[in-house]
Structure formats: structure tokens, C-alpha cells
Length: 376
Image (tube, rainbow, N blue to C red; front, side, top):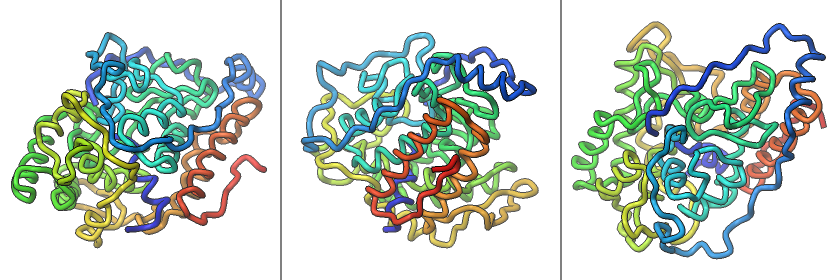
């Protein structure tokens, strides 16, 4: 298994059609004083420290009377992550699909038993690019005014549906963005999931199936998506999502490591726990990831440069074996592009959340040098 920071970046959690929200007025062209006024007029919610590990991470019933399934209501947000969609449908995070980072960390631990430093890293790396640091809220689906007034552009605060931050090409059950809908469940994609489970898993999904399906999905996008790209950070989530179903969608009382296709559909399509579902026994991150990587060891991050079947390696992207390159590039490039010159409470919020992100990397065991894009 490769370095733990790379592991913990992997699962930036990965859906249902949702209504469009009105376009936001551009802030381009405003003076620095006017931009500062936008920031200062937004009520500031200081980011609280993330929750710690569960006191008891044993298996337990999670589809219980306190967390019944409820169907979506108009305006509720769901997105490309079947885990978060399911947790919202059962009230582990707000059923609106608008949540704070702390609520998400708590929910993925309580509902699925994700390991704490893993949960923190994936949550804060996702929040920093897709959430609203001023209000401490993020949509698990599309952009919405429910996360509060936006920071100044080029920040997007556009939710998990945003292409190529966490969501991206080669999803197991969602189409590549080029084809129009990158977040809704797609039956044709799920049929690949079924076919590979039948071929390599005797009708069940496991790590062997995960590796073979990942290989197929990459080649399928290279051959059919003229705008295909698979570079960091999406590179990490694409490989991680392969083992996520086998690690978290199997009932905790079942020790076989084999996910039934019925239970898989319950999460991926229906966004609900199977009846009487128990979370796994013991917290975990990306067990089985090494099997997927080994089968795809020759793949390097890159993109189709001139249409289909023109895959070109991108030497600027972190590889799966470069967790610290991934961390430094994420902070100095991704975050700085969204927030080039923050001031006041916006700078304060970003600095706090970046600290939480780095603390998760330390807890994960990686010795990356901390970077400070806005000074110490």
C-alpha cells in the first residue's frame, strides 16, 4: 500500500438530478475596497476543530429508528458521492445536503466507520475547494445559495458536482462530464459494475473486481471522451472509489468481503442503507487499494490532448506515489487559484481550514513540509 497521505486524499467522497439555481452575479471588476466590503458584510463562522475518533468503532445498526430513510424534498442537494447521499437520506448529515465539515466528519465515522484522520483529510481537502469558508457550509451536490453569500471570485463555492476537483472522469456509476451529467446515477455505467462483478467476482463486488473495473474505466474514457483527463486531485479519488464499496457498503456482520449487487444498487442509485444495515466493524481507510494500484501500475496521470485516443502524460501532476507533491500542489495551486489574495475573516477562515488539513496529514503519518500560502 502506498503512502498514507495519498491514501487519505483518495476518497474525496463520490448522485441524483437536482434543480438548477440562479446564476450568481459576477464580482469581477470590483476594487479591493469593494471586495473587502463583500467579505466583511458576510456573517463569519469561525471553523471549529474537527471531531476526534469514535469512542467505540465496533459494528452497530445504523439504519435505526433515529435515522430513518426519507426521500428527497424539493431543493435537497445530492451529488456524485453515494456515501454522502446515503448519509443525508438518513439524517446523519442534514437532509438538505448542506453541511459543515465537522458534521461530515462525524457522519462518515458514525454511519460508515471511516478512520478519523482519513475522514478529516478528505473532508477538509474537499471543503477548501467546494465549500464556503465564510459560512463554514458546503453543498454535497450543486451550487446553491443555501451555503450563504459567496466570497469574491475566482472562488466558486460550487459544491461537490464541480468537475475535476473531487468529482471527475472514470466514475463507476456517473458519466464523464463531457457527456453532460457528471453527478446523476447512470444505469449503463452500473451495468459495467454488474458485468465485471459477474466476470471476476462470481456475482459479487470485491477488490479483484475493483482492480479490473478501474482498468476498464480508464481505457473506456481514453477511447470515448475527447476531453478525458485523469490528474491530481481526481487521480486519487478515482482509484480510491474503486475499493470504497467493498470497504463500506458491506454489512458489518458479513466478513466475506463480497458486496452483493443488491446492496450496491441501494447505495449507488437509491441513496439508502439496505434494510437492517450494520456499519463495518472497526474504522478503516482504503484497505485493498494496493490490489487496484498493482493491476494499474503502468498508468500515469494525463489527458487526451487532441481528441479520443490521444492520451498524453502530464508531468506536472502528482502521481499516486507522491503524496507530498499532491499536498503542496493542492495548497499552492488549487487553493491559491481560488483565493489569490484573501483578507480579513476570509483569510482567517482559510488559514484555519488549511491548518486542519495539514494536521490530518500529520495524523496520517506523512512527513510533508507544511506550506503557508498566506504567510505564517
